[in-house]
Length: 78
Image 1: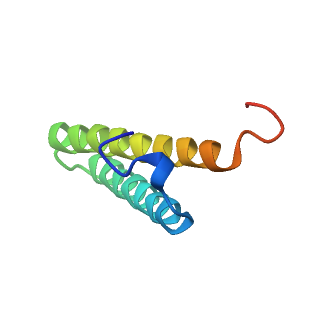
Image 2: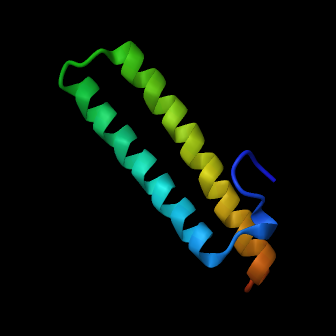
């Protein structure tokens, strides 16, 4: 269980929404990195990138847990 949805209770739609949210955060971090490269405030933007990537990583972890608990690990762990 995380601060998001308990992974055992997630529906396929919730897993997909989690995926879209993680992808949006990653895209936002990419944009912040480009802003730094183009002369933006590197201290604040790099802090935002770190926070965003930590949130995306947590979302992806929830998706993995949900998929593993619903489907099991087919073909062994990778």
